[in-house]
Amino acid sequence: MSCLIHKSTRSAARNVTIARVSLTGRRFMTGGVTPVTGSQSPPFASFASVPRSSADAQKSSANANNASRISWPDSSFVEGEVTHEKLTREITMFSQLPENFGVNQHIPIDNELKERLRSTLWKFKAPIRFAFAYGSGVFSQGRSYQKTKPQVDLIFGVTYSQHWHSLNITQYPDHYSSLRRLGSGAVSYVQDNLGAGVYFNPYVEINGMTVKYGVVSVDTLCRDLLSWDTLYLSGRLHKPVKILRDDPRIRLANQRNLFSVIRTALLLLPEKFTEKELYHTIASISYMGDPRMDVAAENPNKVKNIVDNQKQHFHRLYAPLTDTLPNIQIASGYDGVSETVKLVQDMDPVRRGNMVARLPSSFRKRLYARYTTVLGVEPSQNSAMQSEPSSDVSEGAISRSEGSKFDQMIAEHPELRAEVARAIRHTVSWPSSVQSIKGLATAGVIKSAKYMGEKFSKWRAGKQSETEEM
Image 1 (cartoon, rainbow, N blue to C red):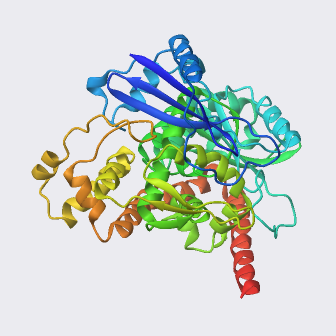
Image 2: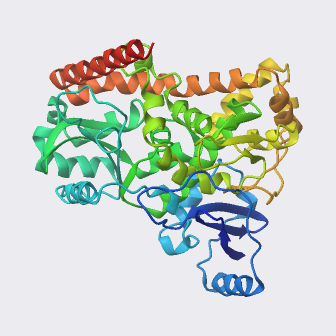
Image 3: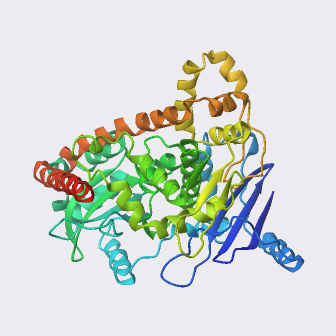
């Protein structure tokens, strides 16, 4: 086992750290950004790395000898299949992760708001292991048509759902609907077994703010980040969020989640595209199949508003990761006048087949099942073609595997974009629909009606904005 942390990979606009962890023939590789000066991160920088000096290489080697080692049983490692169990068993401390691993996930926000949000966590006696804030109450989404400030959206990752709700119901019974009268067991059952595994308490007044907080078990969150079972919370983490309390398992799982959405976006995009189109595709994935987008319950311009107003945050989140992918290059860079950065991806079926093979396991199985029918491949033949992936360290991703002939056939299929979009919609639609219906029980009728009223107002405002721009 060896852990090699490659440092001093730099561009003119920012510092990029590439960490490579060798795991018995398998490799994890990722990038993180070091803090940049100024209030905003720079435009898309060159993917090319500056060769390291021999002194830098020696220093990196010395650091590697001191790094904590992560031992993965290679014989049982298949991307996305048992990673959750290995995370549970192996990752307990940040010191086990490479230096600067996943720092790209930490998005800067106003210091006063950040401290206020962090202090809100301490108002809860029930233990919160991981937490992040998201939505228009934290990040700008353009012109607001609401007369009052939007509620702040929070997600709490907890270890034991029933124990957490038992403590929280005792402390804050008014946060819950009448469902609390059935006890914490009923509440946790509804949370874990219906929809996407999240229990929301909306319109809670706490610490001088109105918040909506969702509770999810850390295990459920990690599984969705790694496998895309529902794309509910993993999809939220595709967009910029403010992490208020971090956890090493979730940081590792989310870094993989971010690589997964880049690959999925590349499968949906043509050969040439812009940086903004990449971010728009990434941001739109979790909304494909979301019933709220079809029933006047969400701003139709939501994705555009998010990307237009948070482009620098998207850049901070994804640029260090795209820097490590060899199949995406800059066609024309930032010229100091136009903010448009044009990119080009390698359409070679072998490399695109590799991307298919490295999709999250649950999502990949859904795509495989569809193409077994589309391509007319019998399950027995399909299994034979999907041989165990081999080691591949040429790309920047957390897990290395090469695609089979079946993956390459998928990559070459003329309707690939439509089929990937179809798989996304099928992944998102059912859990999102059930989660919305579940809100009637978890939030109560009055709060649910208020929530839907606000969502309708956002939809109407979005339509009004479209009319004004015509």
